[in-house]
Image 1 (cartoon, rainbow, N blue to C red):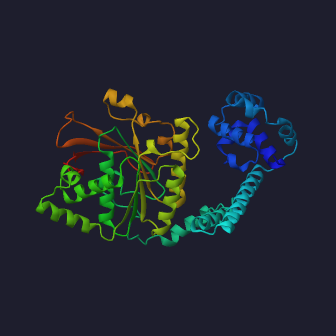
Image 2 (cartoon, rainbow, N blue to C red):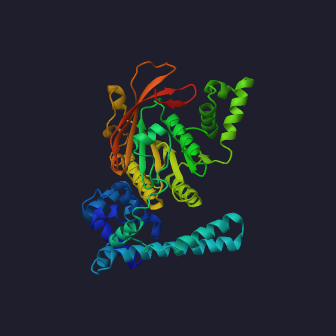
Image 3 (cartoon, one colour):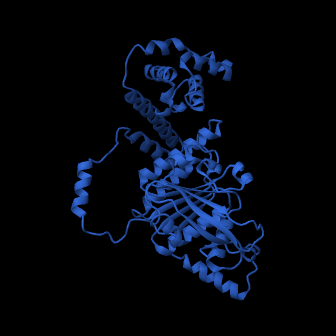
Amino acid sequence: MNSSENWLIGQLATKPRLIHSVPVKPEWFGDSAVRELVRLMIKLDGDWIGEMDLAQKFERENKVVAKSIDWRPIDESQLVRYPLGSVVRTLQKQYATAQAQKAAADFARNPDEKNATNLLKAFEEMGKDGNAIKGDQLSQLMHDYVAEMGKPNSTDGMIKTMPKVNELLGGGLSGGQLIIIGARPSTGKSAFVINMMDGIQRNSTEMVIDLYSLEMANKETRNRFISLTSRVPMRVIKRNIPDSDQQQKVVKAAEEFDGSNIKIVEDAKRLGQITQSIRARAASAQKGHYVAFIDYLGLIEPDQPTGNRYQDVTHITRALKVLANELDVPIVLLSQLNRDNARNNRSPELYDLRDSGSIEQDANVVIFLYRTDDEEDASTRQVMVRVAKNRDGELKSMQFEFLPATMLFKVP
């Protein structure tokens, strides 16, 4: 290891809480044993007491690899004081440069499209400036408002969905929001999202809408949209046996989506794949004209699994919240509830969110869907939609009727 690597490892080993704020990655380090040590730090999430405790934990984890770590130069490096941020940026830049050199060599050997794409990405990473953090002076923000005061906006800036959902949310979806929709299995949360998406595209054909459908195949999601918009029962659509009248309704429903920009994504499973896709799609939309739905949280795979699902979920929800803020777009994330709530058959609370902890903390809005009837095979189900958390608005509830045959949610 070089002096910067030694120093950063020593800082992390002696100050466990730094692992929460320093975006360290194993691949920054040239020594394979050190990379394994960093992976353990991330997995432990700061759960060690000083260097000796970390070393003991590492030896229990992998005795052979742990013996190859030389702690002497790591300890000696701590006699020098460096700015932590500068060391982190140096290691980031060194790694990005090495990756760019490798990508350039690969392209030189085989100049195909894949290697060209990898080379472009590597150079983009190398050109990123970790210091490029921007802010706005409060005084300037206030004067900007004064300059525009008395000039009403033609729109409130919110993304309109189903009218009654807009009412519950105080007008609609807003940029920068992470919205959690929680429900027990078979309550209709996926169908509820399809109703929301249909409402959004009906209100504005310029909207760019993505549904990351981790649970259902694209054709199954398509069938639900067809059934909802044509009112032809799902059983008919799935078996592909519509009569002549129903066929006309399906054709008309399909035409309603001509010109729309809704993408159904079934092949993005990892968090990094989803966030990269959201960035690209949001960049293609006008400001205020993008929204992403993810169905659902429990199926998202972390890029660097810790082996602790609670920690993985914490990382996932925080990453999505940061992304929503950065891009100024709403991200709607579906979540299941803990089994205990199902057994007790009660109205859900924030602590019922599955693998909870950070979910309700990171969310701007939490919406619960839950049945208020007991008829399992009813053609119409009574579903309460309750806003249990709303940082910028009121907590409200509204009774809906859910018609599973056509995926329709409506107010009685």
